[in-house]
Length: 306
Ligand code: CP
Ligand code: NVA
Image (cartoon, rainbow, N blue to C red; front, side, top):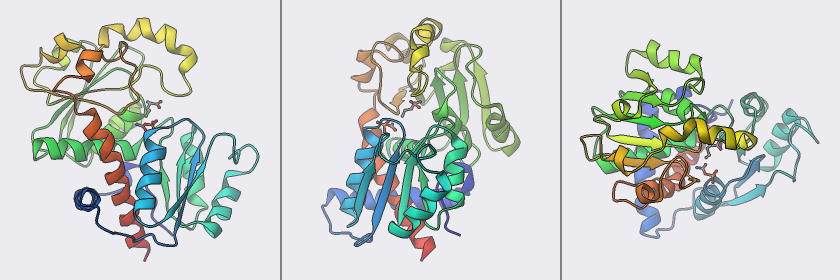
């Protein structure tokens, strides 16, 4: 059975460090424009049921830099689960391709895609999680801080797919993770329990931005209405307004706090333009690292397949 990349919690801490270290090596090669083609004559099928800028461009550019060919299949192309059963797509693509990356709505659909595939399946975001993003995020934190010790991460906003992956990461890397948002928008409770059961990290739920961000090394936010929830955007804008990341919040931490966002950002909503443009913001280093982290994930999966 191929090993897939569906959840951070499918990997142990040593395996995650191996992927992160590989990402740093591949980043250096990419910047030096070294020739590196482990995927010559290989193909990557990229299935998107939702829109994307970073995921599409970073996977396609990264895989082609590594010598392979990437195929973009957009929301109207294959009709996964509608025109054709998910398990049929798995077996079909396993005959044509070497890797599948998929961005789907229902998390169970990517689990099913992987179950029937003979080739590695990489999760490019579901309604439940976004593991490639969070590998990128921790890589970026490691680069900026030089280590991951005594880390306090404060996430402001909706308890969504980004938070669920951060929580899974907290079961593998020690941190104090605070999720601060309005009541009723908490992250998945089973995933919170994974952190509490791990005895590695501490989890705090807060509804008070000022106390939540105190001593935070990282303030992280994401859109208030994720893909698939855009019809709730107007209502959510009122509910989430007190949780906006603005200059006064970032200046109240008592530390030189870094600002992160998975992007795309809705400037003026979850984050102000001035925070996005500030010296605290590392959002573009973070976005660049999508490609290096994912390249490392693909190389790692191909190595354990061979
Ligand atoms: N962060 C992220 O996944 O961006 P896209 O939705 O543009 O791929
Ligand atoms: N929570 C966001 C993340 C986008 C990268 C969404 O699912 O739309």
